[in-house]
Amino acid sequence: MKILWQVSFRPLNKSKSNDIIQTKFIDNIKKFNADITFSITQFDDYGVYNFLKKKKIKKKFFNYPKKLLPKNSKYSNSIMLKNSLKYYIKGDFDYFVFSNADILVSKKIISILKLVKTKDYMGFVFPNTLIKNGKVINSYTPHYGIDFIAFKLNKKKAKLFLKLLKGYNQYDWGVIDNFYIAIGEALKMNFENLFKKIKIKKIENKFKDFSEDRKWQIKSWKKNEFFKIFLKKNNLSLLYAFGSYYYLLFKILRIRDLNFKLFLIYFRFYLFLPINLLKKILKIFF
Image (tube, rainbow, N blue to C red; front, side):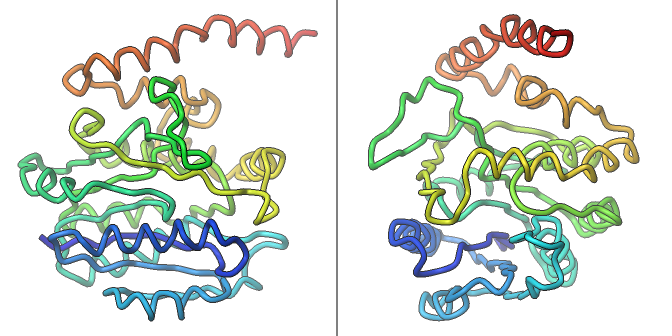
């Protein structure tokens, strides 16, 4: 099985803990019993190329000069994705995988993907098992973030994927989960939440080491108006942009994917929906 695995890395030597996390990520994937090529797009990020060279991984490396990004932007997920899909179409791959570099995935994922017979398949894991300061946070809490997605794409579907990205631009943090689920709907992919089959360990970064905080995240989300344009253009619900995770989790819910733990996570999450809706309504009028 051949996999093109898209991932991007933070600059080296800015955060010791993050350097360790990224090293663990690569070492983890190298143990997998599969032919994996990494598709890596960086934006003049210090030390990344030499780091990857030392890790001796199979890769296609792209560098997009940061000066070509909009002012004060750090990176672009849409540029990463376009580079990856173009390379995927040229190659002979069975799966396209998107992930972040701060996760640990069980090598069981390979045997799981090998058994998939469904065409146009899209498998992901929600929620992650969040590790903060070396400790696992309450696993019944629905931590935000879908940090691993596997697309089973033939070349025709991959070309359609790339076509849908025409004119689509995205910069910095935000709308990633929402975008991938929305594009999955546009491509008529068959969703599967792999939560009851496998767990993803998410190791929380020290955002302060990269001058990133909640304020920066909110600012990044708000400036990405392109996402609403993308949704309108492809006749997709604007709730992907406005409905937060309430809409997103509704879209990925499949009864067959539930186990008792995931049911409780959904229950806890939606339990507070009426209260949060009321708060939003009051905020609009008062």
